[in-house]
Length: 477
Image (cartoon, rainbow, N blue to C red; front, side):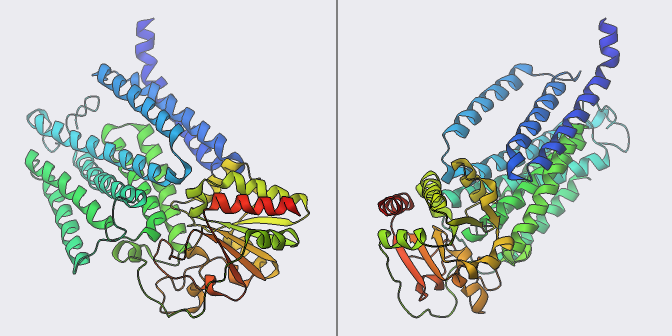
């Protein structure tokens, strides 16, 4: 019996990895639609569970106590943090977990290099792998993959931690200095040159320096980037993490890591391109420039305040209302109140839709997740390209905590830092109401011309309180 198991165990492991890959792909495909996204996460999770169990069956597994301790403790911590994290902090959590993935891949690559150093004398000539079950030696290709995995994995780790700090409010939105792009370029080229040199001289000290420079590059790349670009940054580092995992999967000859990493890398790359397109910016302008700060023509006029009762009357007797959610809705955790208000309007026969800008919030899909948590039906939620043409036939556009994604200067003012960025056409609605805590600028630090428009009114206050007052006004009619 043992001989039978030993003979067919490698085939069973390979088959398990193949099944896991199918589940990864199926899960990712189901995540593309809101109605099936939850099931897609479960499918992909089952695939990861199968791949993890199959890995424990590998014949060269050791340090089982440490592995199990890490697995159990991390699972408990992730479960607790996932349950407790507020929706406002979800972007930070995504950035943090993504950085942990990139860091894990980087450490795997670094350990592969250190192991190769320890076994240089026992490797075949011309290789630094001749024992694929122990992974102590590295071929030229495997070494390059290990080095690249360390490079981009470390960048993802430190860069994601900076993104976490920016989103959490622990780091200033921008950190710039004269000649920073030139300096960053020198560090990047120098780090790559050292990585190339490692293929000729695998010195442990050089490995440590290479790892440290890669971490430094991630910091230098991310610190100058403004908060308005964080959705692009998060998706970019997500792609980096996936690619790093895939490269290290090749080094370890682990098919599950290769496939899962390539899927994450490809999806992250496509999402990065989509986010950059939604902001009408190139990836280079995100990485080597920064959105925000001063700029743009002066805005004349004043913001006009409206009482909640009057705003409720406007919406109650409207034929069509479009709601534009933003980060302020997440901060106030007012999504459930918003859905309660929407149900009242729907019961009165008002046509209500939700308009989602691709970079609304602090991460891709932030507003979709927020509304789904409140139970908003998917057929009421429309993307920018589908709903923008409907604003001109809309009686009231209700903006809740959104700023930069509804700023019309993006269409009219060439001097504005956000000029050319596609925005929701709230200014074309017959009337607009903006729920905002104060008169300040948005995350990009740019004044919003919509707030000064003749057909716009400002309902000041926390979104939770303001929507509660709107509900009271609607119920009083």
